[in-house]
Image (tube, rainbow, N blue to C red; front, top):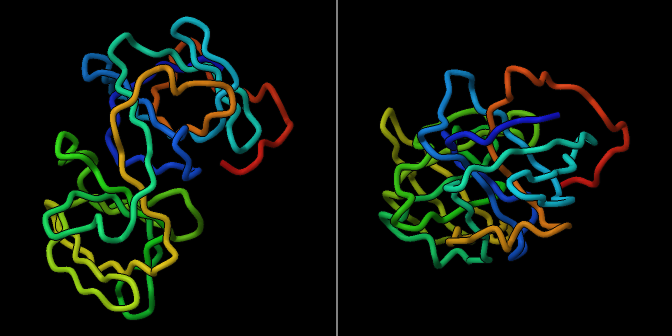
Length: 205
């Protein structure tokens, strides 16, 4: 399957919390009317501008990278890196009291403030969501409870002590080595429809 990279429009959550994890997103000049498709998986090869990825649901896909495709690495962080006015992306699930319980948290650098701002469904399990926004209030007690504010509202999110927290950092194509875990958003080429070319299931990314 051939797809071309497109401008990321939402937060990207690393499937594996290791330094080699990263995401790739295309330039704004490549933006198209079709919605981007999220791809999670493991790099099998990089040949020129074509990144080959084995997805976590067992498909093998080719992703065309532009010369200016941004690449970000993922570094382990901790709860102390989340402060008032930090810009974060939080995958979470709803709780009975109306708050959200974090599954993982990404702390964005200042240069990425505003990326994917908002609240939307996510793909880390039933009822999972993604909230991207600016940290307002913060309470420390057996972890942290934060209020994340975005353009159309805000969410109160509980971050347990054992939740993985990572920081995004600048990267380059040297991170795209076989075995690296990746999350990216891409636009499918109109001339190359989706099709399954491998039924072998990948390990969960």
